[in-house]
Image (cartoon, rainbow, N blue to C red; front, side, top):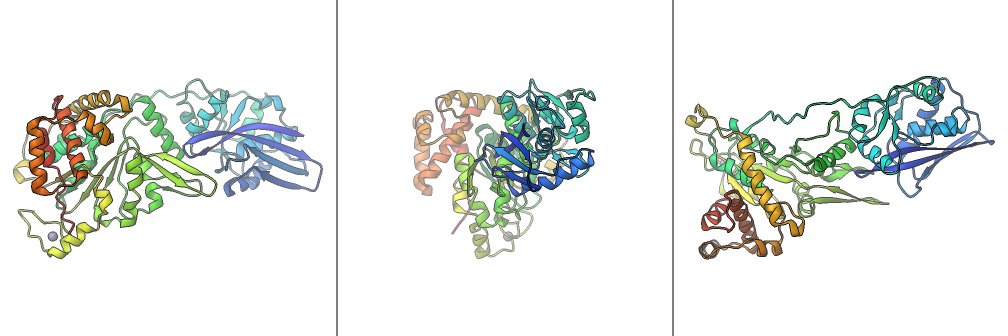
Length: 504
Ligand SMILES: [Zn+2]
């Protein structure tokens, strides 16, 4: 007998409805799954068979064919166990076809017949909804995630047996309900905790306001990580659309455990031993890497020279395009990667170059080869260079607290609003996104400003690229100060954040 049920799997960040067709007919006993299944799907045969048997149902000893449609899409993951099991029981005549017609089933099965959670629920349920399916069955562990979608009914049976009895009308089941959690936007860190560090804090504010990339240099213990960690507390809150997008990413990556959408901007700080795949995404069906997990938030790379050059080189493309392209044999994947890059390094191998309290023990050659470890193309994409000094004793013991994040965030939000209005024609939201064209059209310098810039350029032999960068940062500083035009003092401040790293 022929049966058909709906399941889903993810491909990249999107979910796709999979039609599971099952045919059981007379013939030598055999079990075949066709329709481009990955190894993980082929393995479901064993799990499904055992789960059905251990739930107290029997399948006829005949030839079984399972077809997964559409055939051109590679199916990965164990989430198709459940629809395959339901399809088999329907084909075997245990469940009538009309009892499963309009539903979607998602889940892995244990050998005993328990329904287990799988990653990517949000994307899968959205795909079902788009196809006109409104009722979903899955593990209780992920029902909350499915309920982030509006207008869906979610049932969360613990076992295959419970589910079958419900579909047969033998048992009742109440739909899962969304647990209302109050939005938690209270940050566990705050800029108020950072004493002194006026210049570095100002640099963080500019970076947040214009979405600029930063490189901090400073001795160990100067508070670089502390500063980086707090930048998400001054970025504007995510829109619901952005929050859903980020939640989808974490769901597909198997990192979403909460019951509410992710409202806080991501902050990721991978260790320098991270692999290329870990950074940009990897696997046969690639999982999102750190650049995608930082989407709409911050990617922090501490001890930048310790990262292998090859690993840093792969950051170029996602930084440039704000999305990452990963090619595989049968497909190519595109993941979003729009993040602010914050990097940090010691000024030299021993860490004390320029420190008034410690003498640096490095030779000139050591210092040069240390900064040469960082890839030039990566440095080209840094907008703000800032040196962070260890706070003075008087600053650490000061009773006066630093300015709280919420006040800085207000200025950042205002500056962002001005930018997205000015750049609306090009669908851009921040100054960092500007290309040469937008720069020419929206960044007018007055006479004094241009003269100052010309003088500095001639004196310091700056490149065209650094020229653009300084203008962009000046634009953001002007926006923070509520100024329509870029004034000389804005240019002067931007110049104080230019690249001071010696590379030769
Ligand atoms: Zn040193």
